Image (cartoon, rainbow, N blue to C red; front, side, top):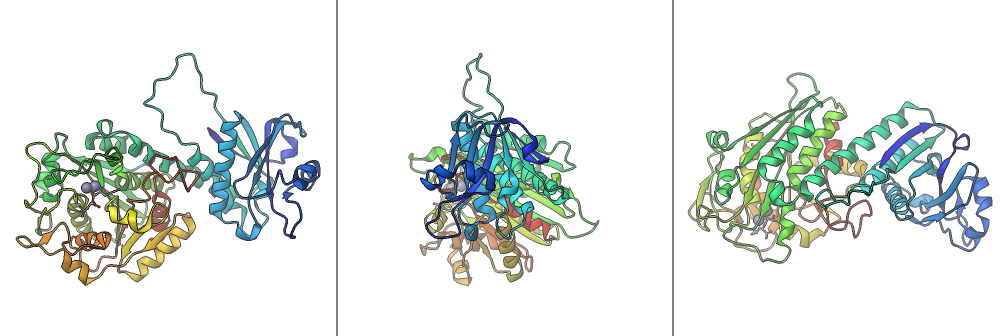
Length: 499
Ligand code: BES
Ligand code: ZN
Ligand code: ZN
């Protein structure tokens, strides 16, 4: 699919399909309206018969309607003006994409100005609309064989607005970049473990960064050993695949300004190790690198948007497997910052690879550290697949995160953890244990473990995306039913903008 923007009057254009918006009437018991008065008149009967209701995410095709210079008409519902937000617009765009796909439409001209019935400005809605289209247009079918003679028809969607402001073009470009970098992250997660090893993940980060001005380096096992990353190496022991420590640097801010640091869990497959996971749904653990993938996508977006900020990202990457060298329950390893930990459950491995990355990030004199990880099943239980739970004790950072999420439309929820959770993570034979014996608050105790590796006084937030990293399509129509979501790319870019 290709989405284009035109500053034109739609009545001067011609093509296969035209798209208008509808919404319920502001008056009770009155038929819905289409945002263009003359089009409302043409569809009067469908409106009074409640075929068109204007409900959010309704998309109805009228084939061969032959309206003006267009063969087909699609009417997309926006929902009530008072309930319209960038997120409802994003979803309306996804509903349109699905209708276009289902009805085999290949060319659509969207009357974009119809989006601004309410107080919100067109630029914000344009960005959301282009995000919704491009996110909904993502599919992962590159591993399926294709019939040789079948050519996929390209879908062209033209967004048409009379507005000539530069802000609309900027918003369109930003939405396009955010969606494409989110889709970049999704693809990394959708790739199965055999085709997305730590080595391949690093190569993909390098490939994605080409031409963006990002500096990407991927440390191999030798370098990781030299850097004394005992957490990452301890988890990697059981795998036949070499680990990688991916570093991505972007210098868009003034020289010497403290960098924003992102850290992402890049576990390319988590079978649990010796504390092996049950078989059911184990295949989903190929997504255990979505924190890392999201951070890589965030860096690509920041560079493409040319943000005036300095940012460094770190993605520790390994598999969690069980060969003869695998870490055994009870084994003790030493993290980069010198703290020792007992591995009392080899399935709590994400915190171990993050320990070194957080220590290393802390050494960069960062303005803040933000990490993302599919860290705990407890987070899935607590919040499900809509809200990403985040942990921070820094009030100013919390305010910035809430603001960022408000703009991005990604739902987040501030989670608690305190000194009790820290105490729960004390070791018997080593400084720390990687699991809590107390039980309960599994996500908070994990956060308390991570905190041990963050430099004192560094504002830090941890995002547990275990529930929101994949399979959100049952709730968010711009996500695939089973695939990776690329969650947090949009929010993290908004956080970076504030520095
Ligand atoms: N990758 C998992 C967490 C996970 C679970 C992500 C389900 C997505 C869905 C993580 O490495 C893990 O296994 N955590 C354990 C920790 C426990 C042993 C303390 C968990 O949550 O069960
Ligand atoms: Zn695990
Ligand atoms: Zn894991």
